[in-house]
Length: 463
Image (tube, rainbow, N blue to C red; front, side):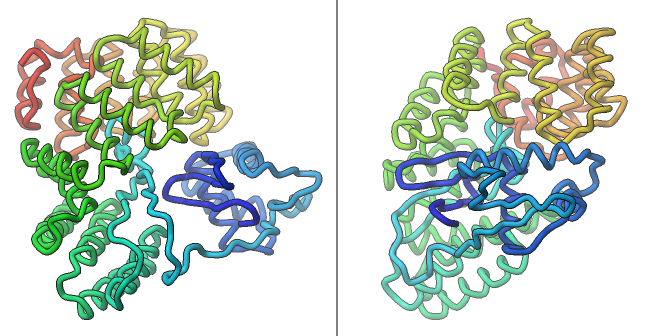
């Protein structure tokens, strides 16, 4: 788009050697404008499409447009990209083009997952995952008819739209007809199923994930040296099969096959952190940052220090990031956890408010939250969040896990255990870091807490 290459799965804008990040919501807004390039979209249309089901003011739209313009280096007075039409709305005046074409050799870059209802999300998926795409590049430049069809299907995966997923799946089938031994096409079909699973109920997702695992295992038999297949197997064994021994094997095999790929080290670090291996997780994260310095602002290192019970060092890492770039939603979420761990609730609350603003809460809701804090601090704020059934991720993941963590802060251990059990039934991925996260310390002597750990296959840090 103009001089920028837009990558929705990374929430990034790239121009030459320069890469800038956009929050998820502004990126979705930019994509919607791009789908209607040269058309004037009213504020009502944009609010209804991007903030579906939420009661928000026009201010959130103004802020999102401003963030997009800032990232693009655009000007409201002399726009090259987004034009404001007073009283009417906004228009993207720089039509985009799809890149790359299926027949164009491309540089072998891997997108970082927009950690899904984890980062995606894992305590990293706390960022990436609520809309975790779980995508990594498999295969190489087209060298056969089957490979060419595979690359076309892989390209469509990045759109994450239902009709594109169907087309991608069809292309992967055609690729297998051309080349029955093309394991990467099986990887593609598995990814289609996993993406579908992210948008379905728990009951519907289970058979989709099982089918995906079968395809990945078959892909491994056909292409045992495919790093993307090994990585996805590792992630599935870790997050859904809960077979940590096999997960470690697959992660290490993926790194052995493609050690220059930063995503291998990034996800392996998340696994190591859940296992309580903080030193190894820190080494893997440093490797990831060395290979992908543009993602230094993702507060992974800070979170590792926090789980290692070095919150002051974690805060120091956050302060380094804050000095380099504008804090984003993932930064505020990390700051909330770390500052609470340090007992600095007033500062943590500032980041709660920033998270609410960036998440599209109304001015009235934010004002009510301020009143709760004035009356009883974060303890009362979190009790009020439970009462109001605020299920959004405001620094402590989404509900029901969020409610468990709020109840811990509110000194309601029995309620916290109840919500943790519900989170376990819902198979919230962030529970995989429960054994090492110091936030759960008030529950560590509770027998039901250990029961949940056992159900997850996890051991307390001392073991």
